[in-house]
Image (cartoon, rainbow, N blue to C red; front, side, top):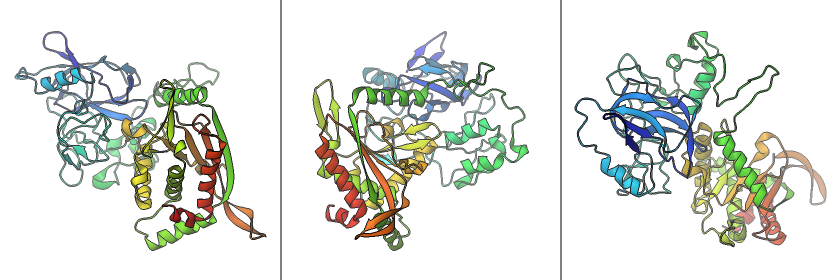
Length: 482
């Protein structure tokens, strides 16, 4: 976690951010040289291949050096920030024992996200408040960062594989609604890193933006509205874009975008999928009129808990995977075996500002249709906001991809390695359709199934797709099978 340097100073090394990630890109420093930091205070926001996270410092002191600038990629285990203790800070380090236990386990890890020490007690945390860095001062930051999403453990150790967000902080609960930091240098309340980046790209001073979210939290719509207000813009806006956004090094109009972060992971994952998996795509047109009518009836009966078409399609997929478990699997090439998963960890392809991500609903087969709808809404919203932890973006066993939102009818999607299958759904449009021998206008969509031919043959894949299509056309069949 750290190493001693010159006369009492300590280097805090970039920790393991989970899921075997080997590097992270510096997005924004929360502190400056000369600032005083406290234990577990967020000092930098970094972007890994899977998420944007705040990194806390494990000990107090004064910042004497920052290693790396915004846009720079730092490898795990290399110095991130150098701290010198203040007078009276030479007492025994309360985290020393903890760090020794870390070294015996998984190595450099974030404070609070180590190798599984501590009890199971949980309590709900308030949403994380991202606080802009204050000027050099001897006072600690007024508001610590607090993790967003699901409840977090009260102690600081979380077993591997838990749903607690790596990179979030174990901090004291905030009372009632979020409040601005007290004092003359109160920082704007921003939860989403996307909002901060959008403001930076357009030269918006967040301190001048009025947040319309709960407790004054600044949302994306607030930044968009501020773009038309000249007074909200910073006095100086960088002439060139950040290195991680794109460069135009020549005069011929070419734009060079570094293949780093999530774009690099997407490229590597899709290339590996195409390289290793002998995939086949089959498709069928279906009449989705009955499915739309069923959804409307459900939502009329329970308007306070609406169900989306995506949730109904997810329920149909779960029904199909129970009947055809061969598709809920992966190929272990080293062990020369096919592993069929006991639970369905359903991945949902989501397009975000950072690129394509596939958040996962673990054990989705245990959820009711309404629970699926709520989980899907929360998960996709968090994915687009960039607040999902890396653990929520891996471990899927089957993916559902609604590319119809892009206005296209069909696709031959690439399987999300190491999964064995992916169901794609095109747009639902009015088309002529034969019903009882008569031509009618119906709501029609195209379903496509891409599958790994190593796990099954065409009979299983065709059977699954036909089951899904039949349930879309006749939702009563779904009720009969759940």
